[in-house]
Amino acid sequence: MKILAAHSQKLAVFTGILGSMVALYILWAYHLFQPLDPFNRYDNAVFSFHALKHIWSLFFLFLPACLAFTAAIFQKVYLMVLAFLISLPAGEYLETQLGTFFSVHHPLYLYAASILLMTLKKKQ
Image 1: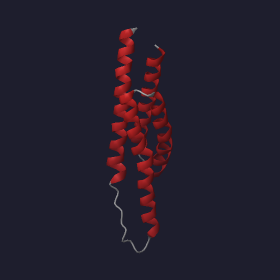
Image 2: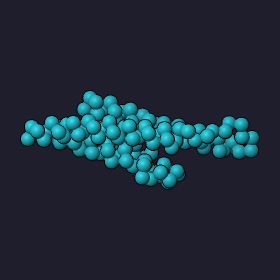
Image 3: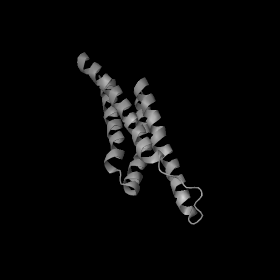
Image 4: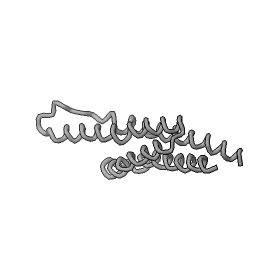
């Protein structure tokens, strides 16, 4: 049983770090480098939508990724649960708005796997 506990601990750390890295990649590849056009005289609503999308992406992808990375390193289950809960609205919003369904949900799956493995480690 001790071998299983050691492997679940390492796997929990690995999935948590991998989930945070995937979320940061999604943020970098799909959401940060969308062109902003502040000089658009004809439609200022487009600029406000893009600015709101950037703020939304930073709050619901970047902060949970940093929180999940910290939770994986220090092996804190409650921080990983918080990162998972903060990331949930981002998955639903970005799925419907931007069509990045498959990529946005991968960090959520990895966060959930890390939570499960961390709680199994605590129980043993």
